[in-house]
Length: 230
Image: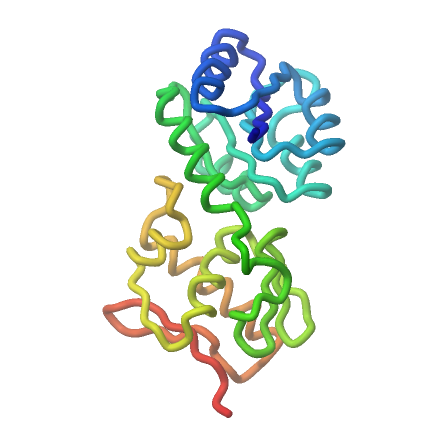
């Protein structure tokens, strides 16, 4: 049974979330403070963690930061702090999604299902999939990538874009289609945010192979993966 850890100090919220998740067929475990939760998810990573930001002993951002040093399992942040800096900070540290309070328990269960579906390794996934472009190796399980043997330090969103583009060389993707394929579980990413992620990807790829632009812009349409000639 899929195990989900809920890290939430408000017992009423935690109880409702547990009820809905159990009804949906998930096994749940609840922690009311960040330190206890961190020890648990590092020791025995669950299939997914729902992590509140405002927590006693250790706040959610710090739990996320430390957890990502040991585990790549999906983490959804629960927060009443909707400032953009918190969203960006969490995503840069490796959060898979955000749900803002107050939220619908049914919507939360739907987001959990979407993240689990997106992050579940398929039968052909794993380090060095046969579908990877020449010179590029993607580890779909741990969200790591390397080019010509050089590790690429990518965020989750950059990795998602790289997956879609590199495994369909030459195919032109609109921004809307990239959002759908790379971030199908997230409502907080705009089409224009794709431009920023593509720019960062180009910079990181170009640092390894100067002189070649791996991602081609198609004016008025979108982007395509451009492998070197020959």
